[in-house]
Every structure is written in structure tokens, then in C-alpha cells.
Image (cartoon, rainbow over all chains, first blue to last red; front, side, top):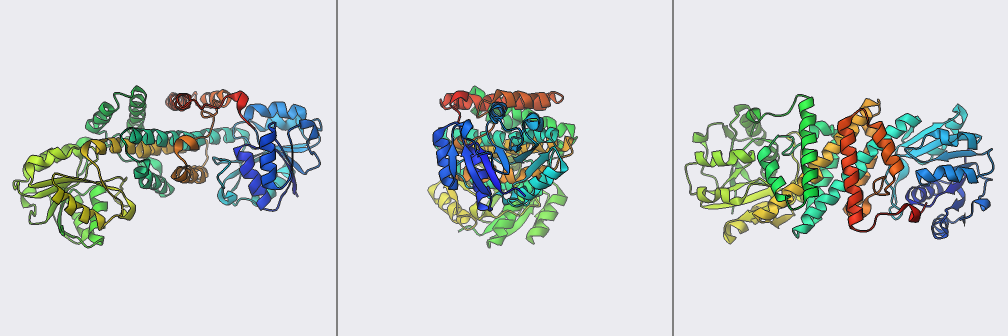
Length: 269
Length: 269
């Protein structure tokens, strides 16, 4: 059973994961970050030790959890001299095999979530996507994951890459559109708050209805009059205009493909 | 005081608005739709009469609420022969002035929301954006709106157009990205459900943190390795690839503008 953890990383994900592991009874032996201040802050938060020197890493734990930027994982592995450890990383897009020659057991522990350091996240419903190089280690990871979440999934490296990319659409791109809508309102002295009930409903709706069936609005209706009115409003902001046009075309074509674009003549009032 | 309502339209918005008005004690005298079936269905739902013939419109109500497609409003007004009525429309993008020569009092009653016929919506927190051609009629509309929502706003035609366009970004475009992410998962045999906790958090987060500050992910970090990995995954789907590239570039440039792109060298683990 995994109980003692060395946590490498002190960024958004590492911070939230560390807090959740601690809350659920795991022992975080040590936090490492290459930045002293980050390591110290998270260690204080988790009431544990820290280091910013890879030579001082505490390798006596049951597992090393590497939760750092994707392109820093390879370099970090080179600095862990003991190759007889259980190691996981938490990245959505890095294959498990990066760990294979650097550990006795390796795996991936990928939470499908967006994290911010100062935002407490309830891990209990976050899908934790696991992969391991042996059935035995997979069982151990499942036990570990099951202590912090009820959503534990087995996902291989290829599936995880796809999932991570889909999450970029559903989170980063969506968030960018919230940002744009906020900017549009701000330029006219209107508050972003006006859109919040709509945004809440947009999300609630797709919890029950597939987004393809939930779509409404001018693009869905092929309402060229409204679309052109909006494009005219955006003519002083070529970038927003381009985005509006681009996504509108994409919506229209996605309903053409499924053969269910509502024709004007058949549209009911 | 407005009490008796003739409701013109039986689409998504008209249906939800009609239900809410009835629930809050208004008398819906009659429902009109050019489609008999739609008129009948909504009238049954509201326990009232219906017509699909403009000559049979019941004009004895206190107000005519026109809730039909934008480009059908002009034609409908021509068919209402009595020009001595109080009329509002519910459109986000049609100026109030379309009603001016066709009514004694006119105004706009625009709820900032996405509606589906079969989805019950609680109107109590929906922002209702009002405009009227006189202070007196505005007061009447405020009283009417205040009976169904606590969020009553005065918004002029120009602001309303902007608001409606911003809502397209925050709702339709966002929903389209949920749809794309669902398609990406489906193609790999993965369930859209895996993304639902992330989607919930994406929305919860921006209720407290401005979306510009809430952004995470490869574009936000200028993480070209992950971005290129994703683009490679999408190479068999040129449309998704184009969208990924386009929105990623837009995110990167939006942080360049505010001078806060995290440089790789300064990024903490």
C-alpha cells in the first residue's frame, strides 16, 4: 500500500494534489521545487519538509509523484540517481514510457481538471486516469487514487493524450471565449456578471443534453441577418471579427454534416 | 399594471417565458404561432387559447409580447392592424425602433439566456434587459419583469446588441467547443462524461476569478511542445486542427497584449 509520498513540483496541480493527498491521510515526506520559494510555500501548506536541490531528494517514500511541466520531466528523471523507485507523473500528454528506464515501477496519475494554486478543489469527483507498467503497480495506484476520488479510470498513454487535448477544447478554449465575451462587454461599459446566469445554464444544460443537441443561436439557425449584424459590430476589432466568423462557420458546417441544419422555411416561430 | 398578455410565438424562448409568466400569476389570454401544432402545444401547456391565424389575434390584452425569429418581427407587425397597443419584443439584436410606428407604447423585454422547449428554466435570476419608449411604459415593464426575476436591467438597443453578441461567444461558441471535445472523445471510444467535472469547474472558477486570470493550459504557458503534440493528433481532422491552431494563437496573443505571457525560463514548477 502506498502511504509515504515524495512530491516533485509545487505548481498548480502539485499544490492541489498535495493538499488532497494530505487531507486523505497520506504522508507527504517532502516537497521539491527548483524554486525555493515555491517549495517552501507548499511544504508549509502541507506541514512537511522541502528542498530545491535534487541531491537532497527524500527517496525513502513509497512513491515519487512528479508533477512538473511536461518538458521538465525528462531532465528531472536524470537527476534521480536511484533507478529502483516507484514513480508516477501527472501529465496528460507525456507517455508513460518516459519513466520506464528510470524506475522499478512506473505509471501515470492524471487528474482531468484545471488547477489554480489558490483555489481549493474537491478531488472526490475528479476523474483520475491511471496507467501502470504492471498489474500489481496498477492495483496499488488504484488503491491510492480510490482514497481521494470516486472516479478512477484506467486510461492508456494514447487515450490520455486524446483526453488531454479534448480537455483543452472544453476548458482552455471555453475559458478564452468567456474572456472574449467579458472584453466585449467591458468595452461597452457592461458588466461580465450579466452573462453569468447564461454561462451557468450553458454548463448545466450539457450535463443532461448532449452539446450537439443543446446548441441554439444565430449560427445554429443559419440566421445570416443576425450573424452579419454581429460581424458589423465587430468590424473595429478584426481579431474578434475573425473568431466570430470562424466559429460561426464551424457551427454551421457541423450541423450541415449531420443533415439537421434548420432551414429558414421550416423553422417554427 | 400589466396583467393580461397575448403571446406571439411558441418557440424555445416563448415557451419558457410563457411558462414563467403564467407561474407568476400573469394571464396569458392567447398564444399565436403560424404553425398550428406549436400554437396548440404551448396553449395546452399554458392552459389557454391559441390561434395560428393573425386575423384572430386577441388584442384585448394589456400587452402583446412578440417572441419570434428576428426577421419575422417586421412581417408580424404588418399583420397587427390595431396600432394602439402596447407591444414588446424579446429579441437581443433587433432595435426597439422596429416597433415604434406600430404601437402606442413599445419596448423590449430581452432575457439573457439560452432556452430549450423541454427544459424548465428558473427565471428568478435571469437578467431581464428592458427598454421602453417612455418612462411610464418602462415603469410598467419593470413591474412586470420584477415579478418573474430579481435581475432587471435597463439596457438600450445599442447595448443590447453588444450583449447579445457577447452571449453568442459565452454560450453558442462555448457549447460548440463542448460538442467538439465530445466528438474527439467519441472517436477514441471515450465518454464525454469524463470531461464533466472539468467543465463544471471551468464555469465555477469564472464565477469568482475573471476568465483572463483563470486561464491555464498549453496556450497560456506557450508550451509549444504540447501544442504541437495536439496538432499532430488532429492532423487527420483538418477542421479541428484549424480550430485548435486558431484559438491557441488567439489565447497566446491575448496574453502577449496584456504583457503577461509566462516565459518558459521564469515558469515555476
